[in-house]
Image (cartoon, rainbow, N blue to C red; front, side, top):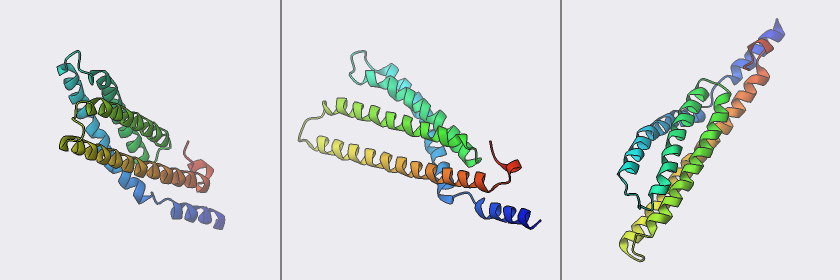
Length: 169
């Protein structure tokens, strides 16, 4: 009886979901959900582009990564909030797709930068916008990775302290 109480009290002590992860996953549900209407707007933009528009070749990749971020991100975040281990894997897929999306964005920037007159105020504003955008996205991505790492540690600690019959699979 004493050993059973000890196992239950250890489990009680470690069952607290990390607040940081909970907050980041909740915020990312909103951010991932925003990708769906943005992907549809990208489709509309793609259809409105002229055939010889140099940015047209990147638009398909932007659309695909937008839908993938929506699907992987929303699913991963919900599963992580529901304490499902598979959410971690989907979370890292979301990280990978987000990195691909950033690469597509940089590709688009290199194409659009050619249209800006060097040394102009517009060129300076463009550069500031690019730096700010990439910095913010990398910052959010870093927070998301930290939340995934913390959540994985939490889930691993749960498995090691739960009685065999209560362990997740």
